[in-house]
Image 1 (spheres, rainbow, N blue to C red):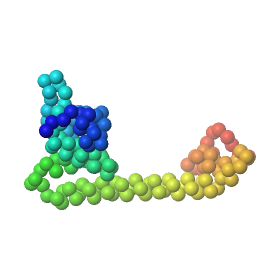
Image 2: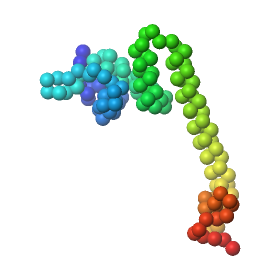
Image 3: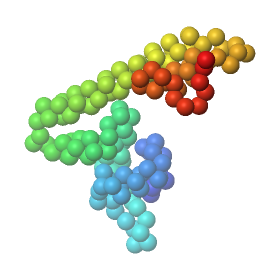
Length: 143
């Protein structure tokens, strides 16, 4: 069974543009072509595209997906290698979560300090204007 790119997009939930992109960067290889140059996708191509889509939904980078695809296709590989890659990605996600939580906490603290009334004083803007030494940078100075 060979299908065109629109059908492949519908079958995988990807856009034709993303499918072409994955092919252009080498994640999807060996796609058949018609005499007129149109792409034809096999069941294996669809399986690979779904694999890529699931890996992307878990936040894996293109480089990591390339590694995962190579491991998936290598039946001699050790699952320990795959687990190591997954754990490295998990650590990256945990670091991002910690960074986002710190941003959330800082912004929440700033928002709670601001009265949000008609007065021009705003602790949020004051904090953003601070220089590392604690002074306020240029712009508005408060007396």
